Length: 205
Image (cartoon, rainbow, N blue to C red; front, side):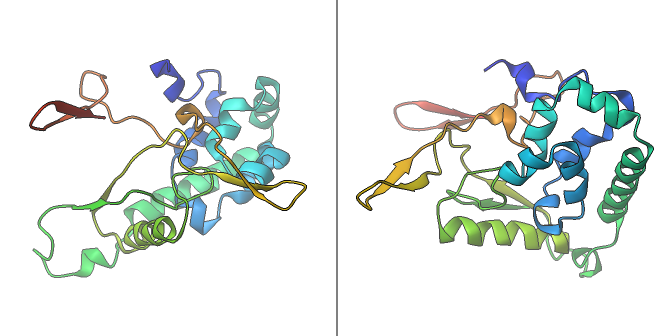
């Protein structure tokens, strides 16, 4: 995969630059305050994917230019960006707890996370529960880092054949169309962590 594929497309009009910031803020997956924004861009694609990042990466340049000239759309975008800034700077439940209640961020390990259908990294109850934990910690302001796997084929889609038998389809998860970005070092390289095992070294990124 070309590393540049993990960046927001460069031809988005300057007036709509904040769309990228909003698309990567996963609060929209449970607060739904920005649903009407993404629906305005491409209602059909939003209805089928609920994936703002995918919409931004695939919508036509012509449509983006139309929206850049749409005063109502720009006003909505600005209002949502201001709401986002206010939410991120507001005092949280954790801020009101005694100093020293937590001296370092919590590392939360799980095999799957059910945050949104745009991140198909879950298959059942465990993922949904883990996703709810992350959403709750986000709302409470608890400093928590989720550690998991970015599956290429981790979430199957169910189908039924003419005889009533269940079929499992495993769509390919293209990370460049998912609302995720790689963590980078100060010089722009992908951050990697090495774990030493008895017979080999495992590199994570």
